[in-house]
Length: 82
View: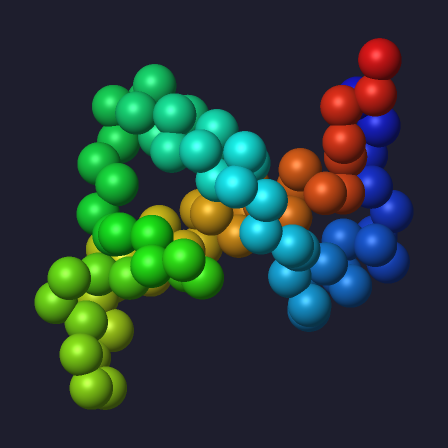
């Protein structure tokens, strides 16, 4: 596996990668494989906690969003090349 360039990684972190449904489903399977609770629900654009409302941000849902962003961005930066 090749590593992404520092510049590409920075740009991806600043902008975020595209949402690909197959990647999202793979992310959820990966979470289940680790026996990690998916403590947020996909709303079609991002993962949201059921208790999130107004200015309240659920720390568990935020953690899922961070994991998802890392998974999504890394998939774009280093695609599987055979």
